[in-house]
Length: 286
Image 1 (cartoon, rainbow, N blue to C red):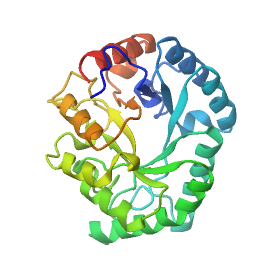
Image 2 (cartoon, one colour; image 1 turned 135 degrees about the vertical axis):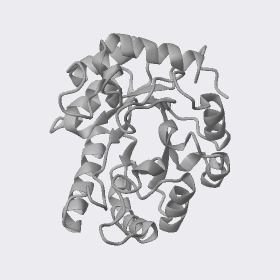
Image 3 (cartoon, rainbow, N blue to C red; image 1 turned 120 degrees about the vertical axis):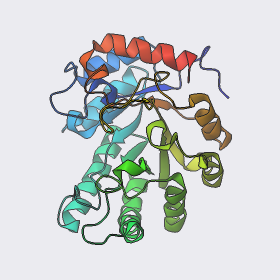
C-alpha cells in the first residue's frame, strides 16, 4: 500500500466536505477559496458539485489546474430512475447529458452517478437496474467524446428505495460488464461499502482501470442521520486500512477523495480546521 504518512499528494477534497452540496450549509467559501486552500496544503485534486459550478465550469477547471491541482470528479449526474429522478425519462436523460457536458468543460476525470431508487410501482431492483444500464449505455459515447468516465457509485442498502437501486459493488460490476463500454466505471465510497465482506473479491473482478475513484469518510456507530451524519476518518467503525488495501490490490492508484456529509458537525466548523484535520487523518488512519 502507498504510504500517505510521507506522501499525501493522492489526497483529494470533495467539496461536500465543506457543505457545498446542500444549499445554505457550510461557511460559504467560493470555489476560488477552496482551490487556494487545497493547493496551500498540498492536496492533489478537487471534486466539485454542479450547484457551485453553475456556468463557470471552464473557468474553475482552468483555475484548479493553474494552482497545481487536478479535477478528479464532478458530482453528480441526476438520479436516473426512481421517485427522485426528473420526470419524464427524457428529462432525466437531458439532465444526464448536460451533466456530462459540464464535466467535460470542467476537465473532470469522471462524473459520479447515484442512479436513483426503485422505479415507482415496479417493486423490482432488477428491472430498475436494467433501466439504469440502458440510460448509462446511451450516454457512454458522450462521456468518451468529452474525455471522462461515468462512475457508477453503489450506495448503502438503506438508500435502495429512493436514492439508489444499485446497493452492492457486485451489482455495480455486473452493470459495468453488461454495458461493456470503456467509459463506464465504478466509484467506491467507504460510507457505502464498509460493511461488505465480499468487497475485495468484487474489486478484483473490476480491476484498477475500471475504478474511477475511492471516497473517504467513516460510519459513526451511533449515526443520527444516514444521509447527513458521516464521520471524519478515524471517528467511526470502518476498517479504513483494510478497505484501501482491497482497492489498491485491485490495481487502483488514483486519488483518495474525502467526502463527508455532516450537517450538524463538520459543516458548522471553520473550513480551515476541516481541511487541516482531513490532512492529518489521511496521513495517520487511512
